[in-house]
Image 1 (tube, one colour):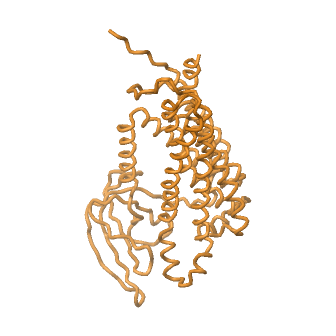
Image 2 (cartoon, helix red, strand yellow):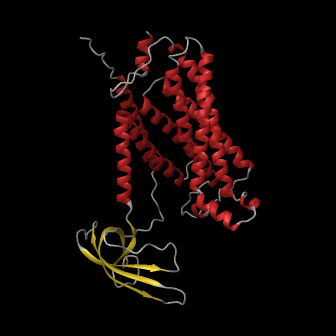
Image 3 (cartoon, helix red, strand yellow):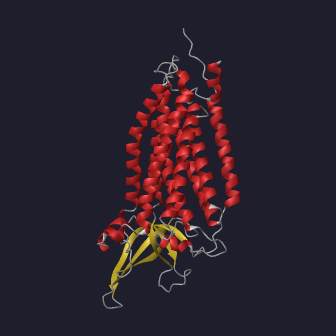
Length: 408
């Protein structure tokens, strides 16, 4: 009976090493950049479940204004009163937006301590909003489960890479900006970490990862440099909306560079699309390199560029549609209240959205030839070797170490 070839453990060791180094980077970055809010308002907020609607009535204190009061009982699901049934009140002001929907039996809600907030009411606990966290957790859990079930061990690596990306952004990048650190340096460092950790965790330390990293980082650098030039040429101030204005009002000695925030948003926003294109081209060229004649680099480059051209069309649309979808409400308002298109197209918020889409797309354009040329040089010796077949094993033998052994 023919024995199955033994699989190397080195790909697993490489990924474990990458994960350890990633965790070390995250922990060190968090220790150096952690941010303690100085203007945070300590409000006691707990969760509860609505049991029964006890009363509804309306009052009109001012002409044209109508206030609706809903008295209900709810079971506390957190805090010192957890498990107890408490009567509460929801107030809906007709003149205040946004107006919440009236509570219903079974709703999971947030409740606030009115007395602690200094409000004079007949009820200590008042409605604070819908508790949407359980629903979001169920949705996120279903997504992660599907990733693991469909992707198997590659799916597990995808989940780990996704968690490290979120940790890098929320534990290091955002605190670093709020602490007044150089936003340009922070953006480049975080982008490089996300590229290296994500691709290495997903594909191991091999030639494919090297090509994808080089193409990805090359595209990001081009996008970053171009964004700096365009921001300066278009005289972007960074005052896009009230959110950016509030950043200038943060207490303390820290002054946040709003232009840097805009620049960082452009780079972070284009990072995922460039990563996708670089990795797709690299994987396709790696498989294709086994089919072309040995040393036929021109054929490999031509095939890679054809693949890249197809990817450019879809990913450019992806970027533009993503930015358009994120600012759809703003575009609708500007279109409705600004009949002059010349004025609308010169609003800084609209200009920045257009710049983000175009600069990100140019980053994709430059990542294609960088990835193709490097992949053609590294994979040109694969012709004549047997292509790697899909394997049910957790981690295929595609590490740098096994590559060297095969070449020898």
